[in-house]
Length: 106
Image (cartoon, rainbow, N blue to C red; front, side, top):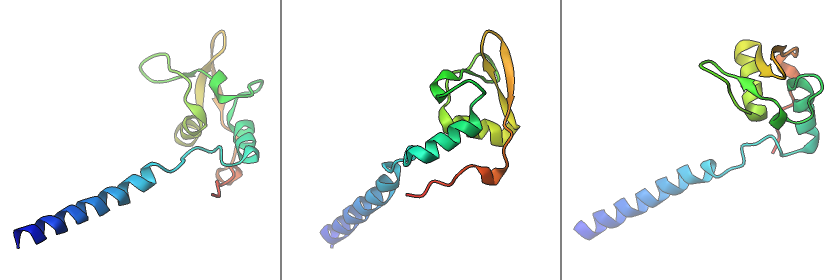
């Protein structure tokens, strides 16, 4: 009886591990489509910037870092814009409506 319980517990643990590991390994980046990625860049980046790695964002508590497109989208959604550095600090208001950002369809 002890071996049966142990076997059931091991199988259950293995199933739980697989159930949680599969979503964690999924691709969560907007790079599913080059067109979607370009639309995000046009809506989220300050004028004159062509790639998110060029934008150094100021975060509370000190000078920030590059945050990627999801990070820029979060700043726009939560604060209506973000501070970025280019010889001085500038505010970039995100002038888009919530439905303007394209959905990512896998």
